[in-house]
Length: 180
Ligand SMILES: [Fe+2]
Image 1: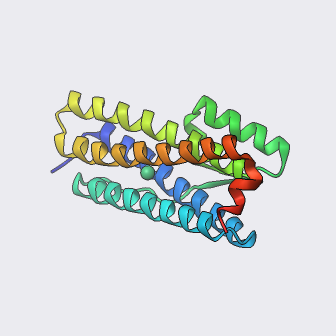
Image 2: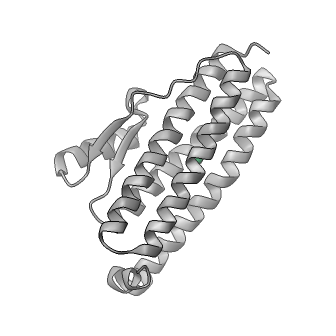
């Protein structure tokens, strides 16, 4: 079935976000591995694999709508550099379309979780808006894919918030001792 042009464009924008998100998680997993936080590494790796599954379902949907999946053009931001971090945070906060797929790497676990939280909030907003667009255009199959991904994103943000809550209750040092 030939798809609505705007929906294909949205699917590609969401695909870029999913791929960026997967890369961001993989980088955080690598850092956790360097620091010997094995539990945290597994957490980030599992999240990366979930994001790749989301990306895969978007690619299939774009193809079934006879669109062309765009999988290149990811950008990297090193958040150990304060200038880049300020800029990247502003980019995320403003959700500037051209920088929608920036990867933000946190210099410590608290910042990594804050970055993941920001990415999840953006994703939840984007999928919610996507569901409305699909309802308007009567593309119910795409809407159901968005709904299913949205449920995962909701679960992910809950897990991040749980970890952030643990950090605030037991301090970052005590939390990290639970992650080896
Ligand atoms: Fe996702």
